[in-house]
Image 1 (cartoon, helix red, strand yellow):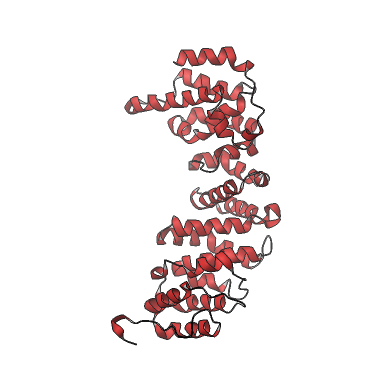
Image 2 (image 1 turned 90 degrees about the vertical axis):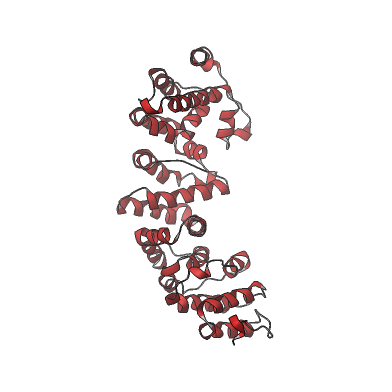
Amino acid sequence: MSDIALQIWERYSLTFSASKDQQWLNDPVTYSLNCWPGKLAYFWMGRIRWRYRQEADSWNGLDDLEKKMVRRFVDDEGDFSPPVWTALLTNINMLHSLDRGNTESWLPDLMKKAGTKFIWNVMLPNPILNIRLIDIAFYESCLDEFKYLSHLDDYKKQSFLLQVFWIVTYAGLEDKRRAKLLSKVVTAGNGIYAPLFMDRIVWAFKFRLDSKGKNMVWDLWLHRFIEDRHAGKGRNWSEKERIAFAELIPLLDEHLKEGMKYLSDNFPRIMGRDFINLIMLKNIDDIPQECAEAFIEFYTCLFMQPDIPYVWRVEELLQNLIDKFGIGKVSPLVSLARQKRIISDTWSPSFEGGAA
């Protein structure tokens, strides 16, 4: 099979003509899976993976034929290049883990030829990059990609900004490099991506991080980042960005009190889905007792907004707050909710064991 694959490449690669169908422009991965150069490149990726499984105990990196073909995929140029580059990029972590020296010998050439816009369009939405790859190639490429974000669909934009979150958190960057990447988040596109980035932070805190992880992110960079946003460093803290940050506050656990102080002086106008998300919280049990006052202040600011609609889940939220913090601390918020007609005048909390 390897001999046949090599012969096909040598005989036919230069005569391959790429499809002119516009549907493939923003979907290079699907195109690579549906043209023969791409399929041929994936054959070699599969061969490498299969051989490793057979020889894991005696593995010594790519063999000469595999190295030759990968190098050909990088060096040869023609209509076949984008689909074979796609195969290499989507398997870059595997290739690097199985033969670090070989991969690092051709990766700079591939990054230069393929270009930033193409690279991230291929690798998103789920890039798999180890710390070394980020350090030697993809950190700079990530910085450069901010120039091309407008070309990505919304899902890939979100995926890229989530990747930025993972990089600044786990890639072991020194402070200067981390600050440079976070500055790009704030300044690129006249600040249009800052709210989207904050939204990805919220997603990570809600679905991926435990309390230990949240503390690590806050201490490592998020505390300073929010402090700078509050101070308007780099670009003014926009209303959309503050709305996104408001959804993060209840997820900060023991840092909730610190987070609230950055919003209490300029609370944003929160309506619609964002308002409902803050009402339908599921992590109240994670809020420490020492943050009770800040948490109640947060909902006081939320309810003080004009024209707040009646949302039946507000009553459930108030009951959960009472169960957690006690009626004494929550009763002013209940009174405010009645005054604003967010809950019915007849609603009253229940108490465990029937005690009032």
